[in-house]
Amino acid sequence: MNYLKKISLKRKKIFIIGGLGLIGEETSKALYQLGGNIYVLDNNFPKKYKNKKFFKKNGINFVNFDCSNLTYLEKNFKTILSQYGCPDIFINCSYPRSNDWLKNSFKEIKLISLKKNIESNLISQSWLAKIVAESMVKYKSKNSDKSIIFVGSIYGLLGQDLSLYKNTKMRENMTYSIIKGGITNFTRQMASFYGRYNIRVNILVPGAINGPVAGLATKQSKIFINNFLKKNPMKKLGKPSDVAGAAIFLSSEISTYITGSTIIIDGGWTII
Ligand SMILES: NC(=O)c1ccc[n+]([C@@H]2O[C@H](COP(=O)([O-])OP(=O)(O)OC[C@H]3O[C@@H](n4cnc5c(N)ncnc54)[C@H](O)[C@@H]3O)[C@@H](O)[C@H]2O)c1
Image (cartoon, rainbow, N blue to C red; front, side):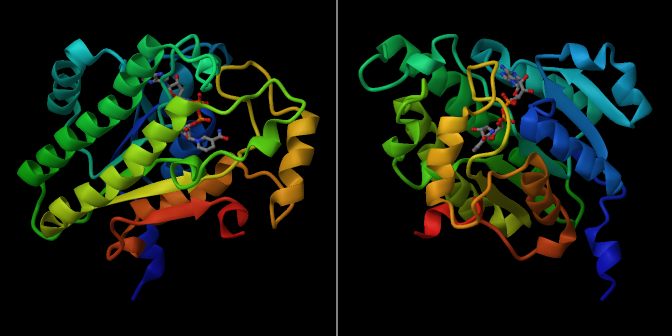
């Protein structure tokens, strides 16, 4: 068995929704290094890249795509599929959220916000994955490995630990648990159905990753980090590259018999 050949992503077309975010960008770069033909589908183009030449220069194709626009979601995504072809690997790293995302705690949440976030996140992710899986069924060559990868969270497996937010501005988020719990079991449901077509469906489950807090421009505060470290067996936050490494594993043919799995990347948080 030639394992170097197996881990290579040469000739693999890879779509990464939200491929410009904290986890998505590192994942895009990692999969590109292994030879993948990368298409980043995102609705935001951070100023740091100045222009799309950055991606062209690095072999990454950028496609403007808004996954929160449910009215045109199917039409827009199918147009992209017909323009660029069906991917071998489909990863959703997007994190659409409403402006009042930080007010999704039990005490502050409004019904309209719950609905909006579930639509733009859980519904868009599951619907896009279904469309891409059907396209994979239609276009895949015999015995070729196809992989769909979701990005969940430890809070799709557990309730949020309120002690982490003590003396910080962060709060528990009711909507997040619904979205993450939903997508985690949807992974199993899709894996169960599409296994017969050699389409694997798995979910990466990160714990706390060092970087900006969702909905805030700032990183995790020192207080949060100290609260977190007290309870994390490895006594450190994760890095985007820790998630990207697991994405390499699930994308490549090294993992061809793995489907319906939750790959937990949390420094041991969920084991205690
Ligand atoms: N960062 C963490 O600590 C952490 C921990 C656990 C799980 N996660 C999960 O990882 C995933 C990625 O998180 P992140 O921290 O990289 O988020 P991020 O906010 O850094 O990146 C999200 C990406 O999604 C894109 N996006 C947002 N709305 C979009 C839309 N409507 N259409 C298309 N693209 C859109 C953004 O432009 C951005 O590129 C999320 O599912 C998140 O829940 C993150």
